Length: 293
Image (cartoon, rainbow, N blue to C red; front, side):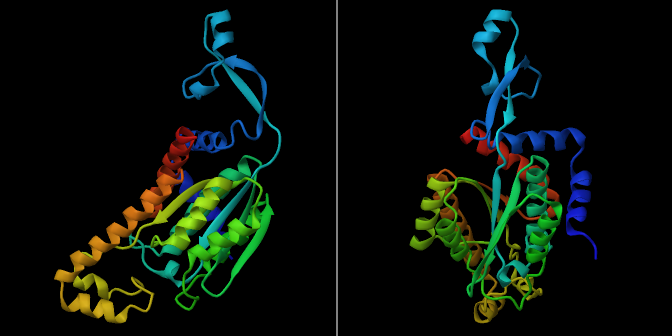
C-alpha cells in the first residue's frame, strides 16, 4: 500500500526548495514561542531571525545585535478538526477532489509538527457522528489520520463541520493548536458561538478549501462538483445561465461572512484550491498567525 505521508513529503520537496522548507519549519516553531520555550542563551543575529527575539539591552552592551535562544520545555499537541462528510469528495477549484487537498494540508502541517517533536490528533465526522483520535507523535499515526481523510467518498454521510468544532470545544480544554480543514461553511449563530468559544481556548489556523468555480451552466454537469442533494437547484442553474452569477455572488457573500467572523475572533485563515498552493499558503498562514499574536 502506497504511503500517503511519503507522497505528501515528495510533493513538499517538489513545491519548495531547501531554503523555503527551512523557513516553513521556522514559522511553525514560532507558533508556540513564548508558550512552550524557555530562555537558553544569546547568539548573534542572522537575517531571518524574529526581531522580537532581539535582546536590546545585551545588544546595547556589546554593540551588535544579539537574539535570545530558547529551548523547548514540553511537547505541544496539534489537533486537526476536519469534515469527513461527503462534501469533501466534491471537486475543488483546481480540479482535484477536496479530500486530496485535505490530505496534503494535513500531511504538510503534521510533518512540521512531528519534526518539531509535537504530537497530532484528529477530530472528524459527519452529520451522523463525531470521532476523536488521540495525539501521538509518530509517522505511523499521522499516516492513519491521512487515511481517514482519504477514505471519504460520495457514500459518506452529510457534512457537518460545526458538529466537529462543537466536539472539540467540549472535549479539549488544554490550550493547543487547532488546524481546521474546512469546506464552504455558512455562518449561523451555532457556528459563530462555537468559534468564539474555541477562539478563547486555543490557537487556531483555518484552512478553507475552495469550491470549483461555476463559470457557466455546462460546468455544473461535471461529476462530483456538488454532492449535497441539490439536483433541483443545479437543474435550474443549467437551464438559466443568468442564475449562475447570482449563485456565485451568494457563495462569495457566505465566504465573506465567514472571513469577517474569523477575523472578529482572531482566527487567521487561508484559501487553497490546488495542491501546488499548499506549501506556500501554509507558510503565509503561519506567518500571519505569528504577526497577529
